[in-house]
Length: 119
Image (cartoon, rainbow, N blue to C red; front, side):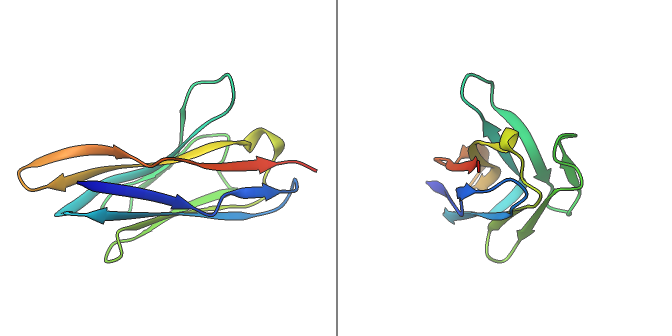
C-alpha cells in the first residue's frame, strides 16, 4: 500500500507565503506524475500544478508566476512553494501521484491540507 502525507498548510495573510510538502511512502517502485490539486468550498477539485518524472511542470493559469512545484526523487517528496497568496487561493490542497507498485501503476491521493488566506 502507498500513502501520501501532506503537510505545511495553515493560515496566512494575503501576500504571504506557504510551502506544502507531500511525502510518499510504502512499497514504491517508481513515481511518475505528481501533482497538487485544490478544492474550495462549493467548487470542484482543480489542478494547481503537476510535475513529471522528467521534471516537466504544468501550472494552472491562476497560479503561474506565484507558485512553484518541485520534487525530490530519492525522498519521494513533492513540494509546492506558494508566494503572493490571495484569498481566492483558500482551499484544501491535495497531493496526487501515479505510483508503480509491483506489477501495476495506481493513482493515489493524500488526505489534504487546509490553506486559508485571510487578513
